[in-house]
Amino acid sequence: MTVETLVCRTLPCLLAIGGILGAQEQTAPTFVGGVNVVVAPVTVTNDGRIVNGLEVRNFKLLDNGKEQDIKLDVAYVPISLVLAVQCSSNAHVFLPAIKKIGPLIEGLIIGKEGEAAVLAFDHRMRTIQEFTNDGRLISKALESLNPGSSSHAMIDAVFAGTRMLRNRPKAFRRVMLVVTETIDRGSEGHMREALLEAQFHNIQVYTVNINRLITTLTDKGQPPRFDPYAPGQRARIPGQPMTPSVNQAAFGISGNSANFTPLLIELFRQTKAIFFDNPAEVFTKYTGGREYSFINQATMERVIGEIGEDLHSQYLLSYNPNNKVEGGWHEIKVITVPAPYDTRTRPGYWMAAQPDSQ
View 1: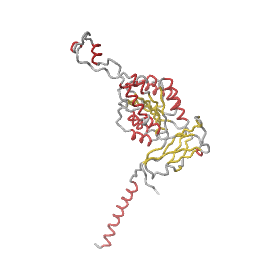
View 2: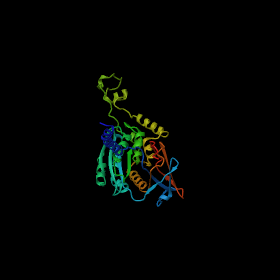
View 3: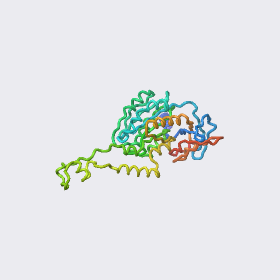
View 4: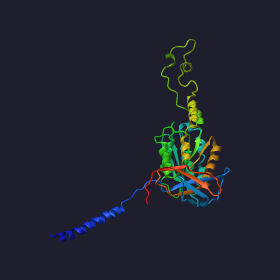
């Protein structure tokens, strides 16, 4: 066999193999991670009053100091809401007020085109109601809430709410409303990771804070420890009958007096919180939400109204960052022009650096 004949026979095979490999290279999927579109909800106020009627030309957005090409959603954007409620044993005094907010959630926050899901948490995460726009189902889910264990995993609840929201339609805004104490008791996850997940999926977190001093004072506490000795088995106290009440006073068993230790611990925690951000403050501050608090039914109704007003008066600015090669923290700053109004938005987000495609 001559060299020319061998080349003629093998060349078509080599070309065919090369074509297959080339096709595989063209069809192989390319996975690109990171932030593609950043949503920055902006509240604009002038001397505390909300400013309406602004257009995209009235905004200037800087990402790490670099001006971005922004878009403004002018049409109504429906809301996907996860309502996460702390149902630990010490929150029992607040549950009656929380159970009555179903109609307010429908009327003031999600409206007719939005949807809401109800998540109850103590040390467990329980989805009481999947996403629905039926206000009756939301109210029914809230009315079924009951106190549970003594712990409440607030950070894990944010994780759970994020998992519920991240698969909602892209045309919906993603909002989480957490009714909770401003302290976490027993989460397995970490606050930083929960915050990054919420930021990555453009979720705004609002909190309605339960007063921790009230929950501490009204907590039923653990049942008193059992006294293994019968009244006549202890050493006799001269001049006193050996009754259970005398034993309690003499030996300090079975809770014979008020226990002020939890209250002192709570006072210490609140003092410490002056210097360190609590989880509620971190989640709301770095996602563009707000913190509220309530103590009774009237204040809860007022707070829900304020949250609805805040959400529905925001300008939704979105952009594809032009500085993705910069990894780490990206600071967002929004300026209104020509009038320099006060603006409130998420302060920034974290992202991994992406190679420049040019």
